[in-house]
Length: 330
Image 1 (cartoon, rainbow, N blue to C red):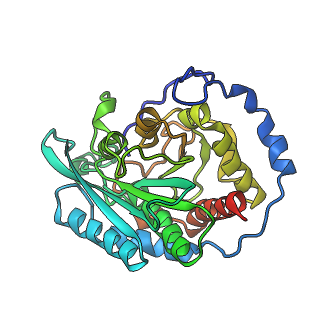
Image 2 (image 1 turned 90 degrees about the vertical axis):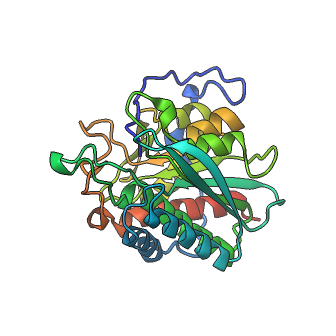
Image 3 (image 1 turned 180 degrees about the horizontal axis):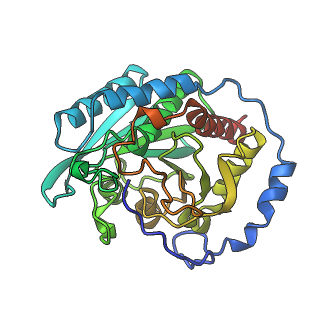
């Protein structure tokens, strides 16, 4: 997770590739949620399984690109997905790490039916940060972090969604993309972040790849997490943003999914919007009303399994699990 610039953006954004002004829809969110008829999910999202997937990643140690732990974890992700029957594409690319050194990145793309339509894009980053630049113990700031939440949690939820999708089709094809080299950037240089999504969005695994929409998960496992409407999501993908938050509220997860504006994040969904023209949203733990914003564990050695909560993983996973079934049920 990069130190994201929280920027003030107008919600009536002129965008040639996507929908422009969405601000007029803000007032509709509450009434739409009241009118929504929720269909009980055919199966429940398994938060315990997602938690184990997070723990399994953390057991490798910090997954810093170029390290043995990083390679082993990537192989483990691929093996899991292949074991569930997914077609895997591993996309190699060259980027730079936190220290400016050239490094090899590895995006992992998984799908069950590459040619089927409609399609939805589900995303997370699987690398972890090479430095603990916000750790309160200054002597340990040069050490890499475990990234249980920042990296691990999004991957854990996606893997459980992928496992269940392989067992029970939701009515839409899901593409799972695990981006690399997201978290090695430097503050003040926006282009140094999100290198995996920058590369994939310009060189997708399929020529002219498109999806109806995309959903990015980033830091979705911490206790008492708060997910506000992220600014770029609201500007470019308001319909799906509001639908996800409405579903969460209908399921009783309104304490996590806050129907109010947060900051605009430089995150993996931004290159997807800019370079592929896919409306994408970011579900990210960020509270604009706190000084830290991302939680006290962000970019510290406190980002370990102690802060991961099954209830938070379950709230995110069940919301997406149910929303996709409701939206695409036949």
